[in-house]
Length: 352
Ligand code: NAP
Ligand code: ZN
Image 1 (cartoon, rainbow, N blue to C red):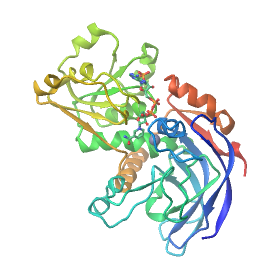
Image 2: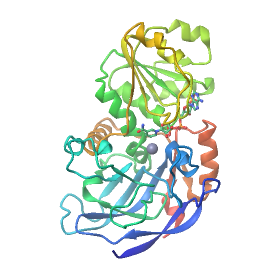
Image 3: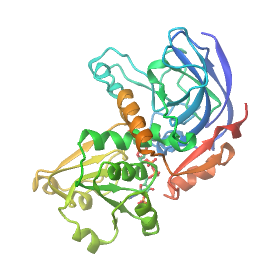
Image 4: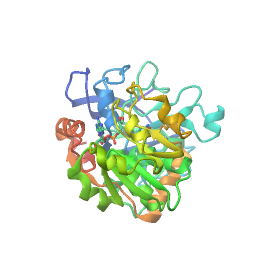
């Protein structure tokens, strides 16, 4: 298949810093949308993958799955998008479209294996892997392209494509409603979207953070209370009171303190730690019929619903806009939990 060279930023190995490189994108097929990337968010998953923290990274890795851009070309079967449209691409770029999960709008759980935006086997370029949004353009199957509501700021909308859907999906699946006491653990990219969404759904939102310095921001973002997780006396006051907890901690951690916060029959959903957790006490969930669950991004239909909700309620991410060359410093700051609250790369800084 014919390809075109595209500028990108990526790593050659897990020890490498991100640096300029050239990658190939397939030429536009009948079902494809070609997108000139204007902004790309920086997710903690980009760092886990670049640094092979989850294992299985295939190099080179070009991260980036919070993509916003403008359509520059469409294939002949594409009816819903035209040149100039502002569109988004999240974590998924392909799936079988036929299995029960795909038919049920849960492409992320495709039984044949979803194709993720980076570091997946590329279905179109045999023997190659997919490359993400830290680049000037991308070609994506029309079924995996999202419409961005016109009123939303483009740079601020980029993080909706991963941080947004990953927090929206569990809040929606577990039917969070007005008056529920919802805890969001970790005020980073995901956590700050979780706070905004839980607030917009009418919940009583408690930001559960290790960083006392983030308390004022948490309230501006929509938290009604802030709970410092390292403060045992404060944690004790909230014991057994939460209807739902969304846990975005990016690494293995002690779960018992958070389990203790749940009410009877309440659920804590993990989205962050894709790695072993520290052992937790079975009694903590047995006494109270509590549930621990997980959630992975969201399907394409649900992602569009989330974007439309954001358009209606004018919700975007709070971002720090950076130039491509500043990405390595940004990674180090994310790892230190020092980002307000999502880095977004201005892709014009990569050059055409
Ligand atoms: P992030 O911006 O780094 O935010 C994580 C926050 O968690 C930090 O800002 C910090 O907040 C808190 N934290 C960090 N280390 C901690 C520790 N050891 N103990 C307690 N709290 C800690 O990361 P992100 O981009 O939001 O992503 C969060 C995680 O979700 C990552 O692992 C990412 O790979 C994963 N992820 C999963 C999915 C999915 O579909 N399931 C999708 C996207 C991302 P405070 O300072 O407030 O404590
Ligand atoms: Zn992500």
